[in-house]
Amino acid sequence: MTYCVGILVREGLVMIADTRTNAGLDNIATYRKLHVFEKPGDRVISLATAGNLAVTQAVISILQEGIRSEEDGKVETIWTQPSMFRAAQFVGRAIREVFRIDGPALEQSAASFDVTMLLGGQVAGGRLRLFMVYRAGNFIEATEDTPYLQIGEHKYGKPILDRAIKFDTILEDALKIGLISMDSTMRSNLGVGMPIDLITVRRNAVAHDLLHRVEPGEPYFHDLRERWSAALRQAHQNIPRPPYVG
Image (tube, rainbow, N blue to C red; front, side, top):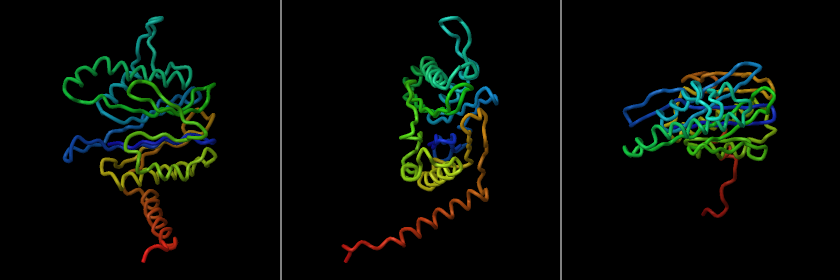
């Protein structure tokens, strides 16, 4: 399983992804699921992936190596896209290209063509944006009313985001809440695990503000986990007991 979250607030963008993959209880490995394509001042694009690892890796390769345009014969890559909207379209095209090549064989072997991606960032001259791209290649965009998107095992971390994330949330607080959401998911699903990759991008900087990997045992994340658990215990203790209990 996987858990990735993207949060778009007024000050900027936060994207967080775990690194655990597994093909059974005794076959657990670590793979990067947060990929960054950056040329400061020109573009900073971050892509978080969930689904079949072979499919997601093939898509990433196509994004970098390119697809030849049917219109003019030029090779298009993630680096040549003039806007984030066009980048989202290109990611969708890359997914469809992988399906064209591998989809029939996967279906014949009863394997699923399972892929979902979060695409966030900014291209110079355009807006900072966040998209979720589906296996069909279509996509939706985060808005001020819904400033976060999730893929993978999202249900455990969603209630925290629902209660705490607003478009006006400070970027550093959005990162903290995103990490709490990740911790809650890891506690409830062993298929999601560390290390955790994260990136923050400030609006109109067109470069990452923070690019970091949280390793097991990191002091800040350990402290965050303990403080959050203690705060939850204290909160439920402070709430009066139901009056209708005998």
